[in-house]
Image 1 (cartoon, one colour):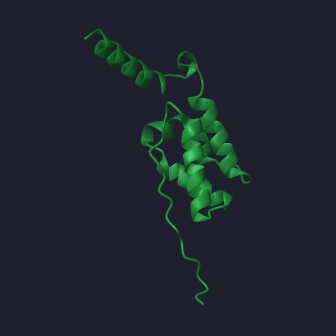
Image 2 (tube, rainbow, N blue to C red):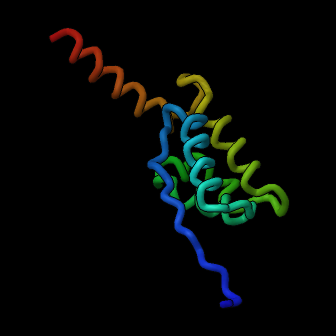
Image 3 (cartoon, rainbow, N blue to C red):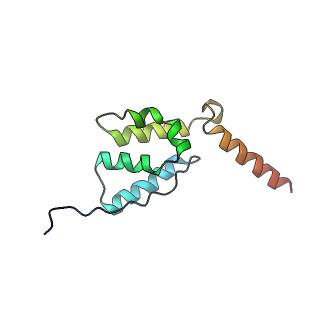
Length: 110
């Protein structure tokens, strides 16, 4: 038997800025299906799945992750940041939501 463990690729879904809780539920299902339980692997899978806009909003924890419970800390940081109300989110999330709302309203008026 080969002493190296085979790695199973996680197919992380695109990050849902508007519903990060549901995104994490979907991602954690992928972890379960692929047998991933290592904290560091989960942390880096999340970082790799985020786009540059989302990463820039949580750059502090990505640059300096805690030594313990990296994944849980990152998950909490993402949920707290992207679950804030639009008016207090420092613009990272607000611009996207505002543009989506304008497009939706314009479509409804037609």
